[in-house]
Length: 138
View 1 (cartoon, rainbow, N blue to C red):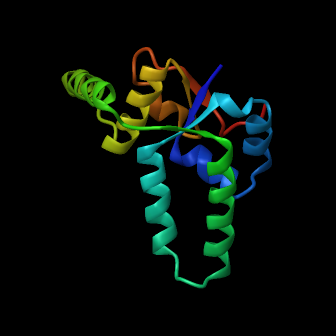
View 2 (cartoon, rainbow, N blue to C red):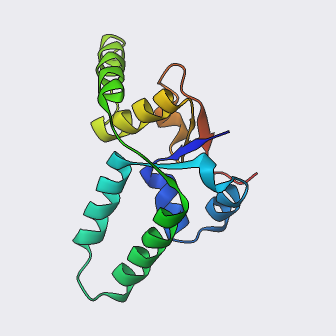
């Protein structure tokens, strides 16, 4: 099973949380994807930390290590079209999900991959999305 990491799951890996590290260790290198919207959110979070701060350096190093281990997934045209369809369906149902989260979900659906997240309830509103809850221990 392939998985796309959302920002919450990736952040837990970067913070070396045992439950996230054990979930990551269960997967082969080629099964894990980092989506461009998640990379954008991580870049924003790192940039908000003061330059030279030890925490920023550690988190940047953890991101760089992980980036070398996972596959890249862009928000391509197919994902953009899927995003529009999903957002419209959710709006009709009176539901909303943040655009970046919906973009990552669109990418996961296009890859036929599960979405690794610590916000399983949030993503469960997306029909057909396989949500892998990395926020709980097994």
